[in-house]
Every structure is written in structure tokens, then in C-alpha cells.
Image 1: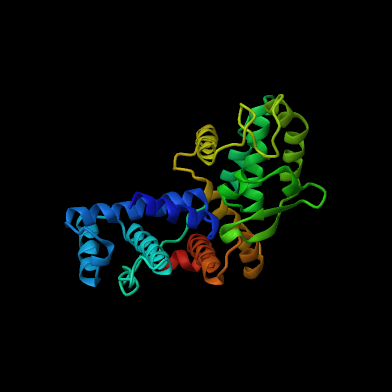
Image 2: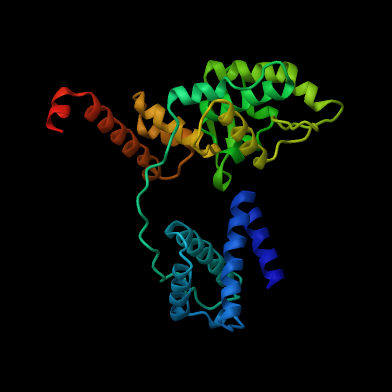
Length: 299
């Protein structure tokens, strides 16, 4: 089984071009399922049937597993069984007919423009790390890129003259996204002064470097956000994807076309982007209820 998971990991990496984060989640979810099989004294994947899958769902629910997590685990198992069938290691996919729990629709949270501004102004511009962090935060908000996409950027991917970024996203799909003048200026300052100081005598094409002159790890981005969110006085939990949510929400608030936002975000389906229209509608309703005089009277 360990060898099988290693081969599946290689498949995800090479043929599916999955990110390390996605691969880690898939292998973790599959590992949880295999642990369940051991408890049930199931010795082979061929023994898994629809009845066993229903017992697995019941087991997850007894553990108070969130519906979103259950959906993710089933998605990982469907992909795993498709791989097994392709390699003639399984005769059927018992997960294919297993229903996914209906998810509660939750609107993505986002930062206000004032909150974004406070975070962007927090880094210390007198140190190489501070200059780097300002450029990183500006780019994170200006481009709407996923944190894994920013971490994977090389120098050749950024064009400061046209303010364009060529990025390889999910499924090895390449797209061009944009940045505004503040982000371009912050990146120029980083490339001229801070990056050479961080690089030292090393050589790498990575855009964002850590203090040792190597490519910044994805987990480092969370540390950077935590640090500057605290400095900005924000009390709620801040994560990199919150900047991506804010990017999309603010664009639509400003009148951007939904399909343009879809392209900039790198979404393959328009329905994925449409969730942000619900955010703007909810926000418009809150503003209306708070500001319109007849609304206040009716309340």
C-alpha cells in the first residue's frame, strides 16, 4: 500500500500537475480512509463496496467531521479509485455512486479596503525583509494570485513595464494576470535593493527569497500575514486566500465584468467566480438597510 501511494503521488505530481498542498491533502484523506479499513478489518481495496462507503460516511459524521471536509475526502477517494481502475488495480469505483453531503453555502469573507491599506502599510521599509514583505503583500492583493502561485514565481514571470505576471496555476494552466502601479513600484524597490541583499552570493531565479537567499516556502507567507495583521490591529484570523477573496470582491464592487474576474482568478468555471457576486449583493443590502431612511423607519 505504501508503494501504491508513492506511485499515486507521482501521478498527481507529474500527470495532474497538482500542487504540493493538494497532494498532501489527497494523501492524508486517503490515509484516513485506509485507517478506517483497518479498523473494519478490510484487507483489500477490492472488498470496498457501497455499503462500506455508507459506513465510512456514518463514521465521519459520528466524529463530527465538517461537511466540507467529508466532501473533500470523497473527492480524494474518487480520484484515487479512478487511478486504480486506470492501472487495472481495481475493477470498480465504489465512491462514484456515493452521494456527497449537501454543503451549507457560505459566502467567502474578505477584508475592507481600509483593512487592506493598514496591512500594506505595516512592513518596515528600512530592512530588506520589510521591503520584501511590502512587495509580497502588494502583489498578493493586486493580482489575486494563490499563495502557491506567488511562491512559485520566478524573475522571468514578472514584467514591470507592462505590469503583467505570467503564472502557472492549477492543472498546469498558464495565464496572465495584472498588477497596479503601487505593486509594481513595491516590486521594483524589492528587486533593486532588498532581493540582492537577501540573495548574497547564492544564485536562484526565485522571485521571493527568505533570509537565507532561498525561495520562500508557502508556510512562510502565513507567518508574514499573521505578523502584519497583528501590527495593523486586526483581531480576526487572516490567511492568504483572504487577500484573493478581497481582490475579487473589490473588483466586482468597482464594476468589473464577471468573466474578466474569472480569467484573472484562473477559475475554469464561471460558477466558481459567481460566489463573489453574492458577497457584493449581501454587502449592498447591508449598506441599504443601514443608510436608506425608509428602511430605517420600517425597522
